[in-house]
Amino acid sequence: SGSGIRTSASVPAIVVVVTDGAHSPGQDPANEAVLLRGLGAQIFAVGIGLQTSQLQPMASSPASTFVRTIADFSQLQGAIRDFTAKVCTAVSTALPPVAYVPPASTTQSVRCSRGADLVLVLDGSGSVSSSGWERIKTFATRMVEGYSVGTAATQTQVALVTFGYGATTRFNFKQHTSTTSVTNAIRQIRFPSGSATHTRSALSEVRQNLFELSGSGIRTSASVPAIVVVV
Image 1 (spheres, rainbow, N blue to C red):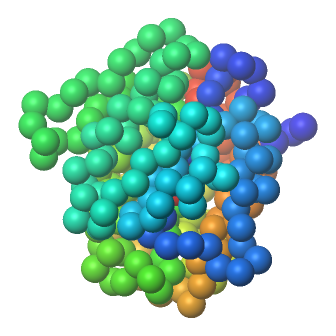
Image 2: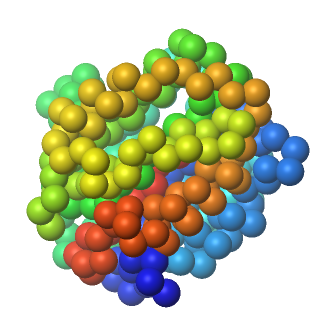
């Protein structure tokens, strides 16, 4: 209670987990994923060079809907359209339908005309590499470009967490109030190059310091869904 998370069945919380490697010892995210699903979250798991069986314990069911694997980082940018479309579809199944707007070409961002509280959780572990980190930031900025960032009920607020060895909130929902401000802030984040992959700590950081902390700026209106994207 007091967390600001919406428990009504009409307000979906969407989690998209994109990871390039197995979690570190003692950092199994399955239990933390159970807690998020208990709050009503739908969890999509996308693995870069991973097997479906490695992602199923974290994802919602069925795996055919909520689990996807891609071969390498070069395919990540092409997948942004599918990710954003799935997020918009999941939101629209519980709220009055507002479909995503397909872009005119594959180089344009998908446009989602629904306000949300969006959390980006970026994997900065050493296995990602500096070139992979740049691809992850490009993925994140293109996703943000699909939303109108602001404080109005019809706009999206964005918070960001990075993880590797531990997890850190880089900015909460209140710190950036325009799309340009958010994308510029993302581009300026240096590669953390963490020595571990603390996936559980990342999900815990989101739950405790953004979903359950009223001062984070998360909105409690039933018309504003909460979305978490872990890359």
